[in-house]
Image 1 (tube, rainbow, N blue to C red):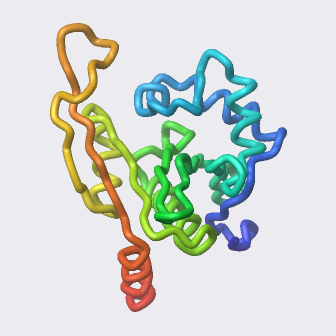
Image 2 (cartoon, rainbow, N blue to C red):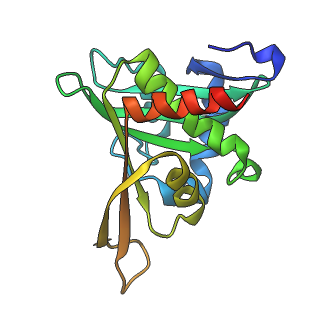
Length: 187
């Protein structure tokens, strides 16, 4: 965790006081369009928020974390399907405030995914699925993770008559650590 007073980006567990902002973010059409996660149930918002708050990576294989910059919440990281034997997990990530999507704040949120996965949880690999229509997320993930597959015409979105690609991204712990070493050398 980094000092929030100095303008750094920090990770923390979700608390009841975060429910209002998370509820607002989860009602945002852009966030809803980018997430297909069985654990995020938009029709049962209170239960979903409670799940983020009480998630336990060792008991139920999930972990919800809030990302803050300068003391303001900017994103959510939700690890699901944590597999402790293979040491991997799916990461559901979103930047809450719309004006920060596609900015350096989005990159900071994605960087914190690696920090949480590889330094806090000691995972070997994380992966994420991004819908083809989500060009902003695709742009960010292509810079920080490797695209391992594109499932062409994989899902049928709410728009009738067409199917959409789903992109599969992955990152290994050693790739994350190498990127951090490279960044260290630049400063």
